[in-house]
Image (cartoon, rainbow, N blue to C red; front, side, top):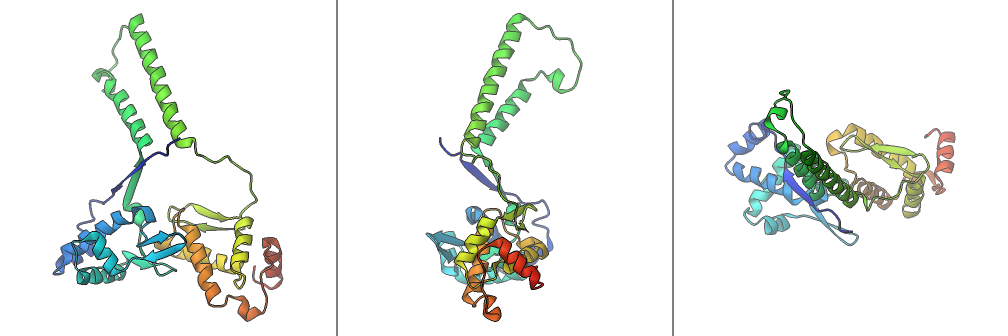
Length: 281
């Protein structure tokens, strides 16, 4: 069955243009371009969770100034360079663990809706518009219902329920079956205040991929970092990329075990027990 389409839009608060940050930008000689460029970058990174990068296969390619200039066309290289530095200084942009620039609070700047949800909203709106004005205003009036009207309304209700079912089937047809899994070994808070639960399977796989790294210790660091940096927390779709980038960077440095002369067992429960004996858990 076809996948539902998703549409996006920008969400700007009424105070956006009067904020101190935007007011400062507008006071600069090229300030209007800095503001417009920021908005265009928000839209350009909709499908990458605010990350100024693209992925080709397993390779993540960071956006550089020439790339931004080619894609957005209307800005000079100097304007883009100055704007990016200003965005960093004012906390609108930060550099991720893998060196990619990320728009802070991107999820609160961009909204989205599936076409199925849009159809449902329109159906409900038509139902509300079809109500008599006296009913919508809360007036209590006596209505005479003939058999013809009753049958017509019943047929319309059946038709609407059928439409609701079709839309729900479209959105839920690809849902994965619920499975019972082992409890998480650690949880990392995300930008929407939900949590990403690290399963024993995830842990064992990362131990195999990054043998020089004390994966459990690094996961604790990531959890603490996410708690302490609410504006830089990751999204549900970006958290695994963040974890892999963190562990890969630690692996390239030689990992924690270069100091300990040991290695991970590859089993989360064994490593937790060992950490408790060593006073690390």
